[in-house]
Image 1 (cartoon, protein in one colour):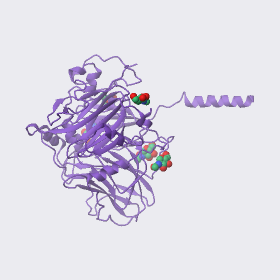
Image 2: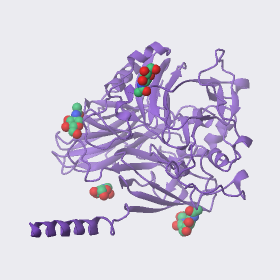
Image 3: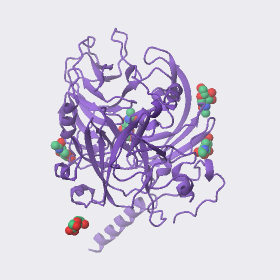
Length: 553
Ligand SMILES: *[C@@H]1O[C@H](CO)[C@@H](O)[C@H](O)[C@H]1NC(C)=O
Ligand SMILES: *[C@@H]1O[C@H](CO)[C@@H](O)[C@H](O)[C@H]1NC(C)=O
Ligand SMILES: *[C@@H]1O[C@H](CO)[C@@H](O)[C@H](O)[C@H]1NC(C)=O
Ligand SMILES: *[C@@H]1O[C@H](CO)[C@@H](O)[C@H](O)[C@H]1NC(C)=O
Ligand SMILES: *[C@@H]1O[C@H](CO)[C@@H](O)[C@H](O)[C@H]1NC(C)=O
């Protein structure tokens, strides 16, 4: 007896010794990035591009949940610059979100170190430069969050893990595109569709994007990093098994092709079970008058023969796309961690605290384009809104809730220009309806959160439509498309303190005002709710030289 007790005590001490005093901090990933211009011809015409350490697109960030990511960004462009980590929920930490409303830009010739921790959002994301029209020049890259070994994912370990960033592409420089928009004109049509910064020529000289061993299964992460067009992804002769969508494990349906709207990322499994040779991965623009197509080669190791020139056809019309959206379901039994911990598993049973209905409009006053949400077209202020709010001078720059919760009855095309900030009470459960009365598709992105994408339907929304919501297994994600003359509904708990950007992912619309900020203030000024402003935070505009508010406790 005594012996057993002694052994248990020893064991406890041993465990304690291992677990507590030497408990390692979560691992760090360090990066130093040099942002420069370069000249490349991704669409056949030499043009200015944005490089990260000479790379186009930028490097993939391969992280594992709980990793601390530290990226020191040196801006060697001739313009202020910021990175945004799209879809990464900066918990309590909008200080690192990297958009014009939260951060002072990195001035040319200077640097800023981003520091953030990735949490249990096992999935596929991308980062990109958020200011001006920089994303039109590149500067984007993949960002993946792997599962810790302790948390199994609902599929076998793939042989390898590949990222495909596809998007429409303009041959004009980002500054030319920005000038077009500044003068009230439209961007017009993109000239090409690229996959990882290139488009296969199909003349036998193309190098493969990726290789596969016969018989093995690979994970492909498919993202739409473009500016204007929804795209359809498909592999010649291979099907895709969808396993993940923006950080949520899905029911594993098999697809011949997938529509990926602006800003979205999907994780799929592809098995190399065909004749060993080359195959094309094909991307084409959707809902456009002229279809743009981009191709890349996937090569079987030791395979023989080029990819067949006939490429699989794209689906037609947006009803197909809507049906596909409805087939996406959250896997409720997947053992991996969930994006929203408390209570959100049963989101269908939470009472709605506040409903907002956002209608997007476009105005062409005096021939000048401007885009709005409920009649308000956002303008950034010189002092980032988050910093103005934090330093207690927010009222000099913006009024909360300029934008109404519902579109005014007489919503025409007239717009009010204002910094657009809506305040929400911490931890309230919110329903947002996006209604798109235009003839073109919309895609929205919300920073800092995942939401339940409960419905997309044609027509206009009324409260009765709630009975059509998916209140059981809607996918928790950070983007949602809204088809023409349709609406979409999302639900979420505003439990992440900070200032968060909600925007149209269509570059032209966002640049010309179709965005807003959501302010979720901490009720108590507590570190439990929000991190302190980082020591190295850049200051600019009216907050320079102001006394720092007391630290949170
Ligand atoms: C960044 O790249 C530029 C151009 O290649 C080079 O002149 C500069 O020294 C680099 N800076 C750093 C910090 O590596
Ligand atoms: C990504 O990180 C995981 C976990 O550390 C590692 O197993 C894998 O080899 C990495 N992949 C790449 C391409 O670096
Ligand atoms: C800029 O980089 C230096 C290291 O080269 C680092 O010490 C400093 O903290 C960085 N500045 C900011 C604002 O992060
Ligand atoms: C959901 O995940 C579980 C395991 O985590 C897996 O066994 C199951 O096949 C998945 N269900 C579907 C429908 O994909
Ligand atoms: C939701 O609202 C109903 C009706 O007002 C109320 O009876 C119910 O208790 C509420 N449920 C929760 C979980 O608060």
